[in-house]
Length: 196
Image 1 (tube, rainbow, N blue to C red):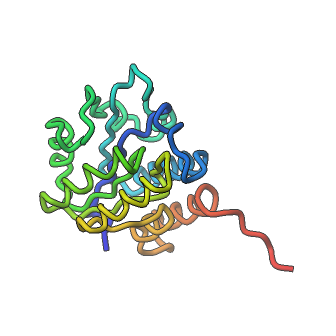
Image 2 (cartoon, rainbow, N blue to C red; image 1 turned 180 degrees about the vertical axis):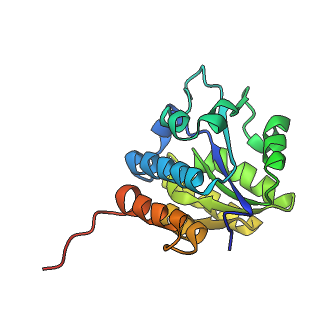
Image 3 (cartoon, helix red, strand yellow; image 1 turned 60 degrees about the vertical axis):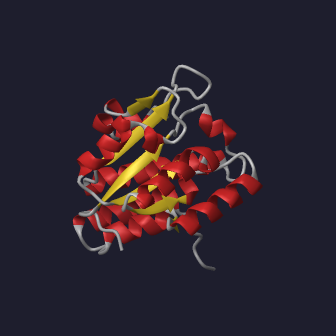
């Protein structure tokens, strides 16, 4: 179990251009869950590392809502010049190390290019990694499947937004837990339809 005290959130290439490449999941759901997880990190005070690649090209800027939710992390984002595996960027690795956390909650767009390599690299360096699959996505079902298999074989655990939020909350009756359950019901879970 990861806790709010021992984990950090890492958002890789959630850029307006790369988001258009997602075909295996509804893009709007990926966007909404990414923003919900960012809000959860703010509620819990989790350290957040963001990175982007070539914002001035087809990939485009990071989703602008992230600047509103996590302004400091957004301003400190690692702007890679084109390095595919974010882990190979010394500034990215330094930002991860600076969190002081060894448990990483990672999501990236796309799963089959932007998420696979840094998750595997982080595990190889002794980090525990949970890949949040519903804030990630790929252009092809086959490449998504292959990426998930490779990550799993390397020791990356898989999770989803609602699961990771519940794991962080640990107790819905606390002030943070109460805020998180509200976030789950309003921004992550499908609407509840009254019985009868």
